[in-house]
Image (cartoon, rainbow, N blue to C red; front, side):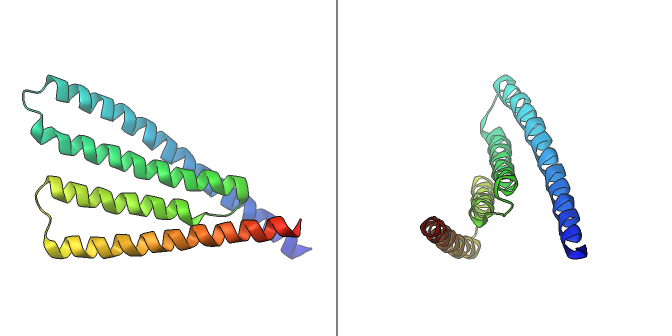
Length: 145
């Protein structure tokens, strides 16, 4: 049937696009890790280290966000579904990254901190709900077999 062939082509196209995204994220993580190594080496050679920590912290947290996003793509290839928990983990890490950068730069304001806190609370609640729904789906699908 025509709709079955279209679905097969659609699935192959999505797999190709996600594969390319995963490839570029992997290359980005590798380049970022290499640059982090050189940044750390420059930190060792520098006279003062206080001002240079923000770059290392930003780079490490950015790499962590990219790794979390790549985990969601790897999970897609296993189950052909995007798991919300991995995406939420990346979003939570990104928000924490922004808070830490603002705090290290001494640019954090109370209203921004409150907004980030509420946002983290909402993301955390959604993540907990997503885990509970996933566990329930696993339990239900396990009972049917």
